[in-house]
Each structure stands twice: as C-alpha cells, then as structure tokens.
Length: 443
Image (tube, rainbow, N blue to C red):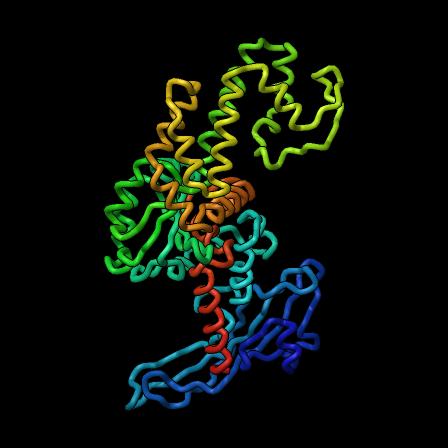
C-alpha cells in the first residue's frame, strides 16, 4: 500500500496493509457502509525472554475508521497472534496480539475518529449531532471530552499582569447560577472558566495560584459588583481595580430606560406621548454623537412633520422633565467616559441627589462609590471588559445550540475548545502535534 492510499484511507500505521491475498477486493462498498480488509503482521519478540515469538494464526477484529464517500467505514483487520512456548528462559506460555497504532488498546474506534470529534467540539453544534455525523454514540463523544480534562488544567504558577473577569449565567450547574470568565485583558485570551462567582469559591480558586503569581497582577478590570472589591484587595494586593466602561454607562442606561417607562405610564396608555416614547425608545438611548442632524423624515406621531433626530429628541424630552434630566445625565456620562475627562466626571458626580429622579439617585451613589476605579479606567486606556462580553456572547451560542448542559466539566471544556486563542486550546493542539510526531518516528 503506497503513501497516497494510506493518506486517502487515513492509515498511519505502516505495518497495516491491505489484505489483497485473501480478498480479491480489499475495499468493499456494501451500500450503506464501506468495509476495508486489512492484515496486521510483523516480527514480535517475547516481552519476558526477548526471543522471537511464533506466529499462531490470526484473529479478525472490526474497528470504525474515517468515513469514505460520506459513508461509515469499517476496518476489518486480521491481526497476527503470537505464541512463546515454555522454555528455561520463559517457563510459562506467553501469547500476544498484534496492535495497531491507529487504534487505542481495548477500543474499536480509530484515533482519527476521536481526533475528528475533538476538532468538531470547537464548532457550534450539539453533542448528539456531532456524534451522529461521525457515526458513533453520544457516550463516545462524552468519553472524548472526559479524556481531554487532563489538557485543561491552568498553570497555577503564573498569572498575566492585567486580568479581567466577569460573570455569566450558567444555570443550575453553579451554586449561585452564575459562573466566571477569567481573561488576560492584554492578549484577549481566556485563561479559565470558574464554576461560581461567590466570594468563598473565588477565594479558594485563586488561592491555588502561587502567591508570587498573584503579586505580579497589576490591574483587575471588573464590573461594579461591590463584593468583588474586598476579595480583589485580599488576593491581588498590588493590583489596581479598574471599573469597566460598559458597566459604568449601563448604570445610567438602565435608569434612563426606567424613567422613560415611568413617563409613558404618567402620560397614559394609548396617548400620543405614550406612543411616541414607546416607538422612539432606541433614539432616546442612542449616544448624542450618533444622532443625525440632516435626516428629515415624516414622523407619524408628530402630525407627519419632517423632523431630524435632534429635533425629535427635543420634542420627546418636552413631554417630561424627569426624562429630560435623566437624558442629560446619561449623555453627560457617555461624554465623560468617551473623552476620559476627569473634569466632566467630577462635574457630573457633584450633582445633588435631591435634584435627580429617584432611579438616578441610586446610580449617582454607585458612581460616587467607584469614582477612583472609573478614573483608573481613564488612565489605563484599552483595558475594558469588551472582549469578556464578546466571550459571553459566544458562551450563550454554545448553550443554545447544545440545548443546555448538565455537567459543568463538559460545559467548561466545550467553551475552552471553542475559543481558539485560549492557552488551554493551544496546549491541546501542541499535544496533538507531539503525538503525531511520535507516531511518525515509530513508523
């Protein structure tokens, strides 16, 4: 069997040959499957006495190989049996069976199928669909995931200088219903997926890392969730806490939307003001820099008058004073964060609580509490949770396509495999390349 045939059939063991002496057609197309007849025979020495073993017939073993022409392929292998008779050097009878390097011991699935399963685990498809496409059972794919667990252990002796973490919904698998993404914010590489966001669990997780690794962390970018602060100061004493821009603006975003709904309710359902505030809700929440000044459109809620976005916003704000005040606060916060202006932020946070609508009072207290962290974000430009939020969206897709997970270990591995820039995925690929080199040298 030449090299091209081996590549086409997916055979890497050079002792495995087509059995053309016993079969006129070693490759049979049986309609719903393809059967390839192989023979495996090579000189073998006794593992006890070291003498060459006698060949003692064959045993036929079937294994699932890589598919051909979109059909499942069965490798029917006639394996050589070996015998070492009792002698002075070897008092007991020793028997052995020829082994195929493409197939692990005591299994009937070729390594190429398992490797293909590992590659497909990085795609957005359910585990059952993956198993069906490979012609194997769902449990086979689960065993592949379980065997990958040894490759998915973080390096507890090292942490990057700048890290970020954020929570995401993981369901009943986590004690609090929320798990954590840990990321190197400089390279946007996901370091690990942490089971729970509870402080007790996070403390136990990060204490696995060497103290020298935790002392090397310079910045930690997080949202405005208060319980994280004490934990970060305890675990990373040299780190500066950076408040993520997205979560800072989201505070005012949610308050503005709440005040808009309150204004709608005060106007009364079905009124012109109610319909206008409901229809143009996206325009109210749009940053002022993105509003258009020259797009004259006929607005049905204002007598079909031709109004630009700016003119429309002014008319909407005239409906309610609280809405106008919340809008100015929201746009001022966006401008301060966007320009990284310390003076604008100070001016905004000096506004008295009593003059602000009720939802904004809570926002004002929160931002005042985290003022120093927001100012740190102005200094360390580019360190945001944007890449973490993008990873969060990827996780949502994985959960939706898989119709949910019941096992967190499998869920974690699927996430880390699906993110191509993770250190763990890179280590796994390096392990596969090393395995291929070992097989090539053995051949």
